[in-house]
Image (cartoon, rainbow, N blue to C red; front, side, top):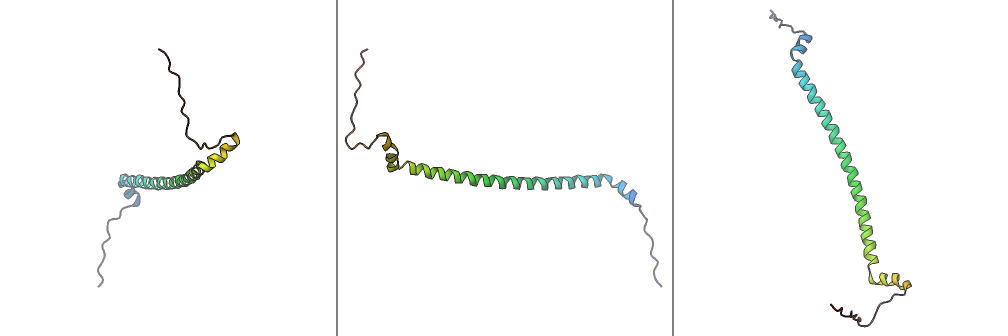
Length: 104
């Protein structure tokens, strides 16, 4: 003969929800915090990527300006730039200029 099964006490769903309302609201808050944290992390990743691209652009600009400055600072380039103004490289000893003594 088959054994008879005893029915367990039935609990209605609304009663179960009302009894655990505090725990369910706690779980809801945790879910909202989890979703908010995920969105904030994605925002930070996008911002970091934008800043990295800005850094690359500024590094490129700095290196090009530095290279141009080094080239323009060469002695031959300076001589070529000041030649139209009538300046030339002096080949002799420098001349000393003496100021007259001021009487006190």
